[in-house]
Amino acid sequence: MKNLDDIISPLVKRHYPALSLERLPELLTRIQDDQQGRELTRLAVSLTLHLFIRSSELRFARWSEIDSRNKLWEIPATREAIPDVRYSERGAKMRLMAS
Image (tube, rainbow, N blue to C red):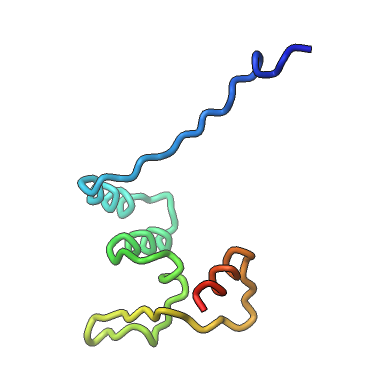
């Protein structure tokens, strides 16, 4: 039997480059104009890009953190655990590290 290295070429890892700042307006326009995705997803991605927040900060946001009169969203450094929500192993480790 031949060595597999001679038959199968190794998988080449491709690392995707970061989007340049100059192309950010193009990305936002393409997200807004996309008609195939869900509107909620488009809004969430657009909001995270405009506010420079993590997706988890948006997903776990509380209305009590938002002051609409002063147009301010105060994101707490730590959040209370959500009752009856199980965290993944990675999420549990991150919660312990943040404590």
